[in-house]
Structures are given as C-alpha cells and as structure tokens.
Length: 266
Image 1 (tube, one colour):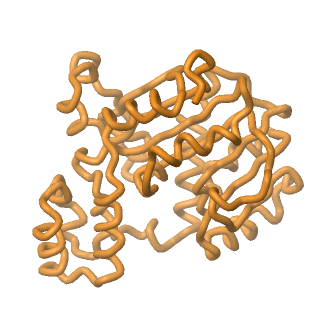
Image 2: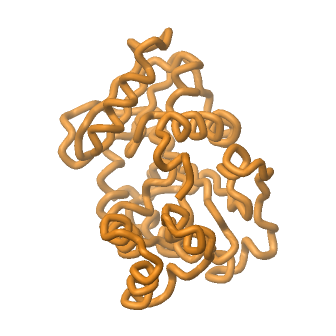
C-alpha cells in the first residue's frame, strides 16, 4: 500500500495534476471547455479530477459519490475556492440521485472497473448527457499487470507483483491470505475481480447502449504514473493497439470520449 491510499489530500492533488495535464487536453481536442460548460463526475471521490474544470470557471460542476468521508473531504478542500458557488457534491447512488438535469460533459476516471453490471450502468447514465454532450471515461483493462488494484496490498511483495490477480478466485484469495492481507482488503480486491472489464467487452457495451466513439487512446504507461512515480506517459504502439485480446496485457489505462449515437439510439 502506498501513502496516497491513506493520504487523501495527496490523492486529490495527484488526480488534479493528471486531469489538468492529460484528461483536459484529451477532451479539449473534441469540445470547447469554458465558462459555459457543465460537468458531472460520477464516482468523484474527493473531487480532484474536477478542480481543473472549476479553475477554468465552468458554470456548473457536480460530483456524485457513495462514500461520506470522501464527500466531506471534497467540501472541505473546495471551501476557499474562488468558484465554490459553481460546484456541488452529492452523497448519493447515481441510480437514486434526484433530477440534476443534463450536462455538457460527464467524466469518470478509474471508476468503471468498480461498477457492477456495467451494461445497465452505461445505458442508464445517458439520461444525464445533453444530446450534443460528451462522456469521458478512463479505466484500466482487467488483465493489465496491475488491473486487480493489487498496489493496495499491505504486503510489499504483493503490491508490486504483476498479473497474479488473474488467477482463479480460490487461488487469488489463498495468496492474499497467505501474505497476511486483512479481510477488508481481500474483500475489496475480490470485488474488483468480480467487476473486471476488458476493452473488448466495453466496446460491445458501447454498441448495445447506443454510444459512438469520438476518440480513443491506449496507454502503455499510464499518465497517472508521472505524478506518482515520475515516469513519463507513453502510448501503446499502433501495431499492438490493433491486436484484440493481446493488447489488454500491455495497456495500463484507456482514454475514451463518447457521444450519443443518434443513428443507434437505445
């Protein structure tokens, strides 16, 4: 386990850096972001991804999360922001949230891989997107070296051990117990295994839910690693990017930008 997993302010600052340096440029190439833009983040945590949007004066910024401590932190971190009146945090389940209208942009980073029934979810969240709006998602495919989020392990060995998360459930659990992980950590990691998502399955979901891919980037070295480990991001080469299944072992994160497919509305 790394310090950032318990130091939530550090985690917030790391999210802010990556969002500003990589997520916003990725989105800005397809849409203009500014004072007229409304933004919704689902699974916002403390809201680090939202700060660059608020800094640029986006008219309405909303974060939704299920964890009270994270929402409490978010409210505290933004209390002195000059545009604090433009941001709102909701402690709620996105399926139960009251009508909050539609947004120009929805963002989700490192959240989709934790969601159960992604088919239902992707179809549902379209109701929050304006007809001309865009939906940004970034997530790690399951079979990448650390797709199981094993970096959260307290064991120094397991936190740096790639690929062991793809072992059968019984063997994965056995190894976690063998190396002294507590039941809370084990349950959390097993849940990630049950919600695992691949690129191929994700793209099938997009077609079924009626989305159109506006832009897609595969990263061999995750942009997150720059602020975490001082390693420069690197995109996966074109040849390997075009090989289904095999590419999933080398991609540490994907960036997608989606729109509603008006020719295939669901």
